[in-house]
Length: 548
View (tube, rainbow, N blue to C red):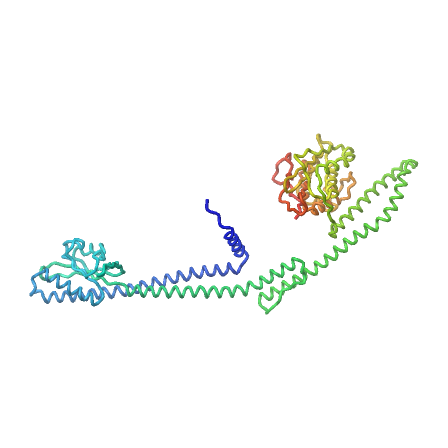
């Protein structure tokens, strides 16, 4: 396992990666530098190769010509002395001394080996320049001149040892040629070893020049790229900043328009878009304000006549025993509808408070199990009327959350009433099951019914105001159509979730999830949204109602 990076290194790497992801300018400059470096490297390598090949070719032509001239001159001297010299050893030595002496003055080394078919260089018998190592002559070239052959050359490394015993190695060219000694008629091989020191220095100078020019070119390209990208990226950054301020509610922000190029035209279009959005948002805000004020005013204004009608209705309802059956029934219906109308006014006022942002929490530690049992007890008459069994399943431990008990019980009352209202009393074992659970982060309550369920897509609409899955279905619990909308707002006010699941024929399940402490972030719910007894299906209704 590799060692962990230090904390400072990890933080620095994270900041650098964040900068790399967010900066277009940095990525453009880096990619341009990389491509420029690759191009400069390839071009420099090509130029260096061409220069090297040119220098070596010229040098090889020169040394081959010089070696040929030396061989020709040596043959001429040998031919002039052919009738006067019969000692082959002395003639060989004189030839070697002449060649070595000329090599010392002209900058090349000489090896005189032979005769052809005789011992190798390593076996001795060769004459050569002082300090020269005989292994400087490559073995393939020696093999080539093991018989009588034409002039040949090859590259080699010239190894020498000076008078102080210091060894050195230099690149060079070795040219082999053959001469015949008149004294014994044998053919000897002469190796001329020419160093390439001047060409190496020239090549190193060219390489340094190319490297310097390449680095300067990369720096210049980096500067030009930085300048060009800055001209393009700066207006984009300004547009981003203005867009962020617009998103934060500063609708008066605009871009400064300079010139008539594409950037200026983009800024003009952006400003026009911002002006249109500002106008539309203000119109919508004004319309929303008027609508909220209208709902609040109507709700308040209806309270006085409702109170009067309620008093008259109560009198009629109390005296219905002395009325004719038809009139008594009308008094009962009037009382029922007045109750529903009063509930609707209360819900409208509550909705107007949420819309106006005036709703506040009165928090305390709430035991969700106790709250669920109180809700079950208050809805028991409705459940008995419908023939539906409502049970609170035992919890594994305490389920306490910091919440507004009035709002939590209102949410649970809405969920349980809806579950009773939509339960199928004709099915065996029909009932409503309430589960409560909690963990270290949150507490949750699920309300499960086995009724008609929700069709695909309805789980996303069930919290809409005045929405019904079946418009022809009567509200036997006396609901107003705003209960689930208010319940969702109550959940959001706590920082929690209210979600729905349903499937036709398998019933529905609603889940309320609250943080254990007000203001804490929720990451998961202690209870699953899809009930364990639900049949698996690929087209489950989507989750809905989660707080954003």
